[in-house]
Amino acid sequence: MKRICAITMARNDTFFLKKWVSYYGAQLGEENLYIWLDGKDQEFEDYTGPAHVEAVERIGGQVVAAEKQRLRFLSDRQAELLGQYDIVIGVDADEFLLVDPALNQTLGEYLSGLTIRTSVSGLGLDVGQHLGEEGPINASQPFLQQRHYAVLSSRYTKPSVVNRPVLWGSGFHRVKGHNFHIDKHLYLLHFGYFDDGMIQARFSDADRMAAGWGRHIAKRTRTIRQVTSLKARNADRYMPIARFIQTWFRPFYAINKPAMAGIKWVVRIPDRFGDIV
Image (cartoon, rainbow, N blue to C red; front, side):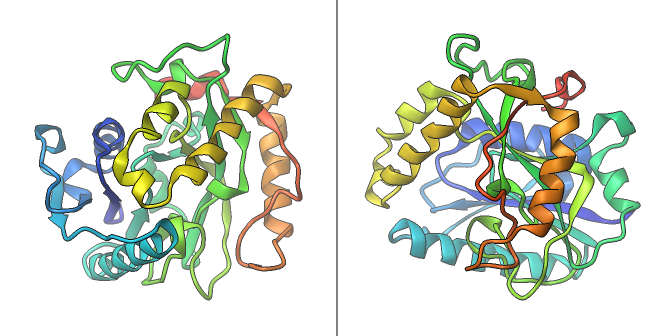
């Protein structure tokens, strides 16, 4: 087995951090998790176990500038950790990198056997709430037993896995100066906007509003609108097509990022994923 760790940074995000520690701890070992809390006013909590947790000086400013600083900070930590680990996984607290359960391997086992050319990406699935069919999320139950639909999203096909020092762009969306490679058995599931009630609660978060997140959060409600209104397609049929499209179509302003060529596909997440997260 290769030495693999996962890193993240969060502020006022206990809801997702609990799930993040639970999931990546089971996949990699909690001692291989590194969490930086954005602001020394953030408190440590007992769910982190042996994970490495550190509160650092708040990264202030408006959302775009602050996000660049955040990813510069995490890229620096990633470079340091690659002195003791073979692979570093960088994701937000609401993002979960999954290996297809049909392979019956942990994430650590799968990545250990993978040939990585600087970075590797999982196909992005932006999970939403199907209004009228799915109720409020219950944090004590697996997410994927309560949410069954996702948008196939190039936005979340991120170069999350690296085996050499790189500079991540804002939001982990790309690595500067390198291409991306989408693995056929990896998926990055984003849960940040999978519950309408939670989205509305974020509008009342003074920190986020002061930093200019209001427009961003409002845009994210479209994930819920899409999974509620668009026809759900067969995931195992359409995910390989999306992977092909994202490999060969690039936005003209960033040729090292994937694109979906304007296509909006909603898929029903296969039942075999139901117990993972």
